[in-house]
Image 1 (cartoon, rainbow, N blue to C red):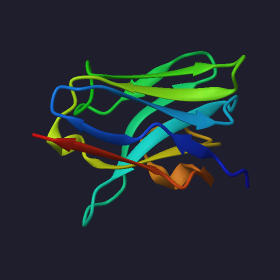
Image 2 (cartoon, helix red, strand yellow):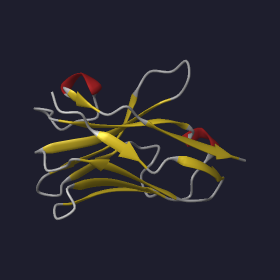
Image 3 (cartoon, rainbow, N blue to C red):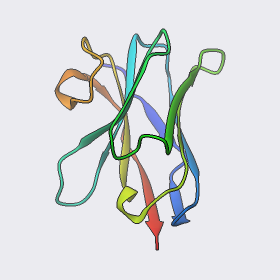
Length: 118
């Protein structure tokens, strides 16, 4: 298994923005998940190598997943953040099926905390 490394988390006010990063990238399928205390880990967004993306309904229109092959980095641009976006965010890779279900992803990072205050 490959260890992924996330960065870019922090604390922002409601309506603010953050950009998360994850290295290395370059997998056929990569994804972002998040987990709040007491809740299950949920899928946020996936991206295939060809650029095809899937978003959870809760983040559509506010979050954008992308990857930069030259920098070997996966990104999650988060705009119009809400208090309910507060969670630990995880990068994942290597899924056979590029869907928003954690069971398909064998490679994970340690997570980066995002806190949104009202």
